[in-house]
Image 1 (cartoon, rainbow, N blue to C red):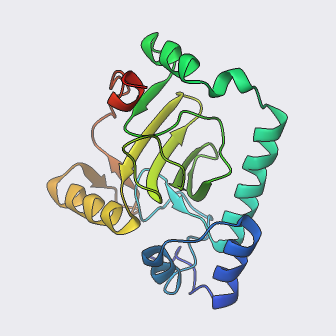
Image 2 (cartoon, rainbow, N blue to C red):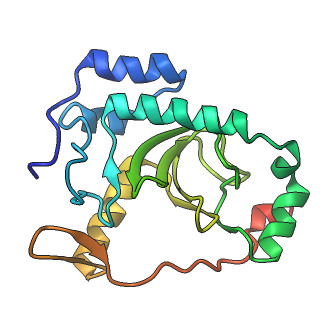
Length: 195
C-alpha cells in the first residue's frame, strides 16, 4: 500500500469541486480524507487491473483535458440516439447499462485511469434508468461504456467480493489482475432500445 498517497486536505477536495463545477460524492470524499489517490509510480493499483486512483490535482487536470478533447472533436451527429442505436446494433460500440456512449461529457468526473486511456467516472448525467453519480468505465479504444456501480461504496464492496471469490489474482509483486476477460458484447441496452 506504499503507492497510496497521504490524505487529501479540505482545500484539495474543494479545489476539485471548484475547478470542475461538480460535487464529489460523500463516500469518495471520505476515502480522499484517508488517501489522496495513488502516486502513479508503479503498475500497482488498489482497484485492480491497473485502475489507479487519481489524486485531486490529477482529477482536475484529467477533467480539463477531457473537456479540451471534447471541444476539439465535437460532432453533434455522434450524440444522437439514432447514431448510438446504429453503432451498437452493428457492434462498433458496446454499451452495458444506462451510460451515454459519448467521447467525453462535462458531467463525467474522472477518478481512475488505466494505461492512460481507460477511465472510471462519476457520471452525473446518466442515461435513462441510471443514477446520478453512478460509476462508469469508458474504454475509448474498445468503444465500450459500462456502468459498474451506483456509488463508490458499492463499487468497493463488489470489488472486495470479487477478490474473495477468485475473480482476481494477486501476483508476487502485488499486481491485482482479473482472471477472466470482460464480455464486450452485452447487446442493445433496454434504455437505448426503448429510446
